Length: 169
Ligand SMILES: [Cu+2]
Image 1 (cartoon, rainbow, N blue to C red):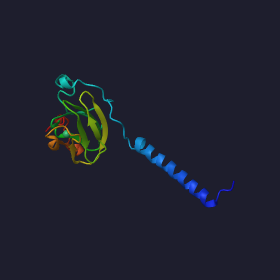
Image 2: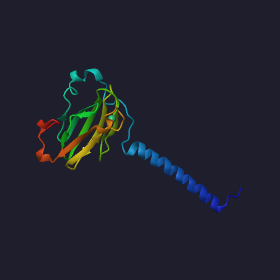
Image 3: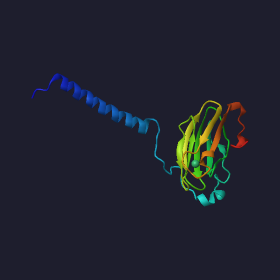
Image 4: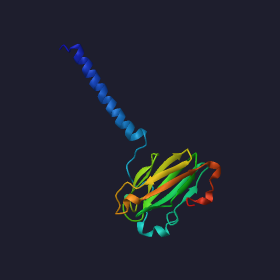
């Protein structure tokens, strides 16, 4: 069977497109660190956060030379602590849970963006390099004060960080 030269060309180009689409979807799913909401950070009882070793007094802990863990509780209509204070040029792992209903947790300008589900702990790791203030917003409708629910991630220059701030100043 004779296949025309142009037809071969079109077949080749459409195959290339299909491979290209698969590659972009694969990159989007794996390469940029997008993952499904899950309970990778563990489970907690949302009704007894007061007794939880970390969430009863949420804040920032230093766990390595440039590594920090931030425990955050979302509740109608605040994030605790607020502000969350960390030093520049560090890696921060957020553990976020909700005390009441489903909330959102997005640190504007970073790749931190997750749903916050009561009973589950969302875990996200972010590298913060530049000092400055980053807004934190709730992006899941959580009640009539939802539009006021915001927080601040304050990244201070390394030398000015005082670990006793613990996330609250
Ligand atoms: Cu909300």
